[in-house]
Length: 213
Image 1: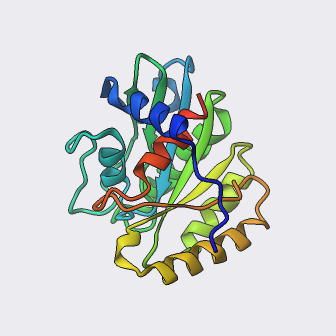
Image 2: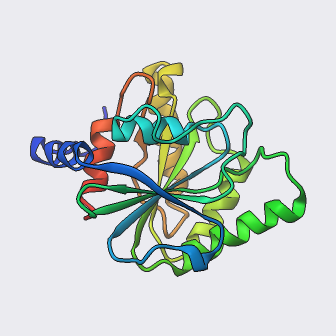
């Protein structure tokens, strides 16, 4: 039996209202000097290329073309900034990892940018680490979790594409990952489950983010 606390109706409504307000892409950042002022709460999305970050951001904001997904995995090569509400929140889409067909030098540059951002952004409240439910935690996810453990920022695993599994499989995967997260000091203890295609878990994720404001 799932005993995870569900958000209240008020929390769901607060999340809905936040994302019902203005949402727009404002910039792609290629180095830390280009970051906008740290003047509001910030959350970011990390994950392997093709894990569904763009689809999730579009579902979360209710804008089908806000974040562009690509047929070429690893195409996101910047920290893409979106502003939400009346200057209330930044959503940040981090470069995907694990698939990009680029040089080792370029890949290392992306990772250095990401690592520096995670360690030095005072307004960053949470990293959502997206994991494809069909694949579970992979070695590259574990590597990123180790990096996040050393970055002094809370991160939370978020399963995507859970509509591709049956409920028993999702529940088992969720429980397994939550057990493994106990070994990671910076990890939020609860794993969220979503399906951008079906809209599952989107209202709960909005509520989770709104609660960070």
